[in-house]
Amino acid sequence: MEVLKVEGLSKRFGGVYSLEDVSFSVSGGERLAIIGPNGAGKTTLFNVLAGQLSATRGRVYLFGQEITNIAPNRRARLGMARSFQISNLFFNLTVLDNTLLAIQGRRARSFQMFRSIETYGDMFAKAKKLLSTTDLWEKRDDLVRNMSHGEQRNLEIVLSLASEPKVLLLDEPTAGLTEAESANIIKVVSGLGSDTTVLFVAHDMDLVLNVADRIIVLHYGHTIAEGTPEGIQANPKVKEVYMGIKELAADAEAH
Amino acid sequence: MGREPADGSERRGLLKLIRLVPQFVIVLLLIFLVPLEPTYIQSLATKILIFAIFAMSLDLLIGYAGIMSLGHAAFFGAAGYGAGILAVRYGIDNIWLGLASGILLATFIAAVFGIIALQARGIYSILITFALGQLLYSLATKWRSVTNGDYGLWGISLPALGLSGFEWNGTYYYYFVFLAFLVCYLCLYRLVKSPFGKSLQGIREGESRMRALGYNTWLFKYVAFVIAGMFAGVAGVLFAYHSGIITPGDLAVMNSGFVMLMVIAGGIGTIYGAVIGAALIITIQYYAGILTADRWPLILGGVFVLTIMYARAGVGVYFYSLWKRVLEGWKF
Image (cartoon, chains in turn purple, orange):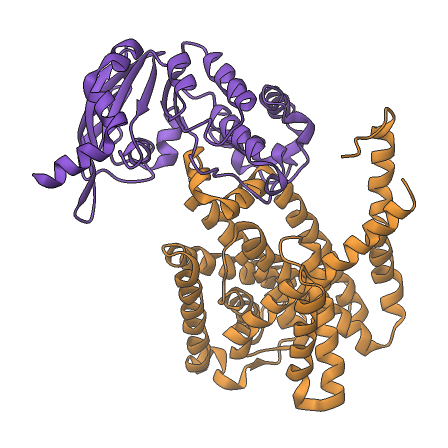
């Protein structure tokens, strides 16, 4: 079943196309990695998919419904969730409050005004379960701004998982983490059931090769290759982009 | 990190109770000591409690939803005018009707202003709240047949409570305001701990994340804006009855700045800080006014500078953390 479909998607900033005519589709339960050199348009693609940026051209469909121009909160309600490359957390709230807010996001309960948020047993239990997967439960009363980078990255993943998304977009989930921390993230992501479709941006080849079923390579806003991890590793064009960025740039200037 | 020992929950409960001691003491003083004081002290305490309600309502906006407003006095003043006009122009002698109509008017105006002010963000949103507030200010000065213009609408006497044989005096009105204050405090205190209140704090901390999590953040801010306007309305009506007069100045930017000063001085985003701030500023205004007549703003400014220098989180927060340190010293 086709979960997400992208048709001719373009995003222009001033005179520069950050994404140009990108098309692909993702089927249910798939793990799709988006890779490419810096500035390839990976994060822009995620921002357009999740609604933080609007598309210049093209369409995005989620479960067959067009979502190109709807607000991010409505996309979230349709089952989409994302993590951010630069931790986008509630820094002056506790770890537990961050998690409870993420769990509560898709519930009508958010408008409850007369009962303490911490008295909802079901949400509390869920927060405990989520935070325990990344060793954050012991730190639940700490303010996020006092936590280490690695812990903040873990919480970033926890927040994106909390709504039990059907489509999860992870933007560089392991960036800046130690090997052990990365391994834990890889474990959490691989442990997701097949009812969750995962798209992720990564530079970390451990993550890509361990988790991805399929890889899309972006370069200057274009899709230059698409295929299985083995196929992509053998693809000469991809090698050129990764190994010879300088030569390619010189080549482009000469034209 | 100091996790609690095995019997931690019991100790935690006890600690929680002991932590509440200052609040109990303040409430007991307000109930038993203030009415024994001379009339002018009772009147001062009444005014403090009224402005405490006003400041708490603004703290919900600034401290929790992260919305700055320089037009918050519009709701306070409009509610005062609503109750005043009912009493003076129509002679309606019922405090409940006065309260209801004043609060409804403030809520309605907040519902309209909120739609406009929340179209913009940050500094632009502040400017819109300022402009809308001044709009009401000029309406109050120009619509003389109803508002009595610059002279202010005077002669607002306390309407009947609806009990036979009951006559108002300063002490009774003080108790009335005290009860209203308690209700408002408890409502707002519960509100900020609730899922809704936490959502507001999430929006303050990171609106884009909240949207990505599925929250219609605009609606949350709007509801908070209207609720804040409603509570400001409660304070406005009580103020009109307390002072017997409502003037255009009560809904102007000066008054908005005055209440913002209370919130900042007491401690933003704490609710109780707004109460401490109101007590501090109103007391200083009163005694400085006696000392130097028209130079009290100078003294107020000095206090403000001192607060920023030595208790930046706010005086209320400063005392609260002192008290917490005392508790820790007792090794609970």
